[in-house]
Structure formats: C-alpha cells, structure tokens
Length: 115
Image (tube, rainbow, N blue to C red; front, top):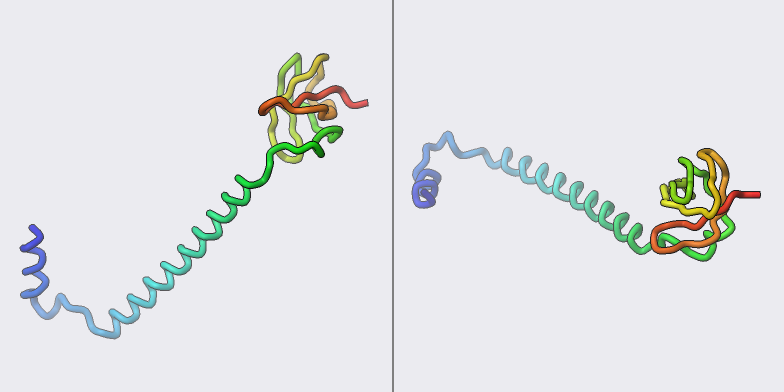
C-alpha cells in the first residue's frame, strides 16, 4: 500500500499538483494556526500549573467566613472563597447560615456557627 501511494504521487497526472503560490499560502496558514494553538496550549498549561502550585489551605483560612450550602449535622458543604468544601461541625448548622472556619482535617473544613 505504501509503495502504491508513493508511485501514485510520483507518476500522477499534472492536475494533481498544486501551484506554488497556493502551497505558500497554505503553509503560511498552517504555520499561523500552529502558532495560535501552540500559544493557547502554553497558556492553558501555565494556568493548570499555577493552580496546582497554589495551596488549598493555609492558616489564614482560620477565622474566615463561609456560607453553609446545606445542613451541617455533623457533615455538610460550605462555600468558602468561591470554592465548595466539605465541612464538619460539632453542632447542627442550617443551610444559608454564615460559619467560621476553625481548622481543616485533610479535605474537610472544621466550622462553627458565626457569632
């Protein structure tokens, strides 16, 4: 099959060949698209790397305010800084209440009712 395709191109008819100016335009277009897609992927990979380097928790989270998204009794979910977090509390907390972050254990925030 490979030999056949090579022979097809080398002994093909003249109308199968493209003019030089068309080939130049096609190459410029292909290189331009390759550069645009390459820049996009470099940008996307840099954003992913930046997100992976950013710590998910720091001591500054303690005493910060979050909103309970559902009932926390003893576990539920909160919205902290635009991120969804699993949360745990010692006392029941209703959805919509504001809570204070008091700590973190693995990927679960320890919270208490604010006030």
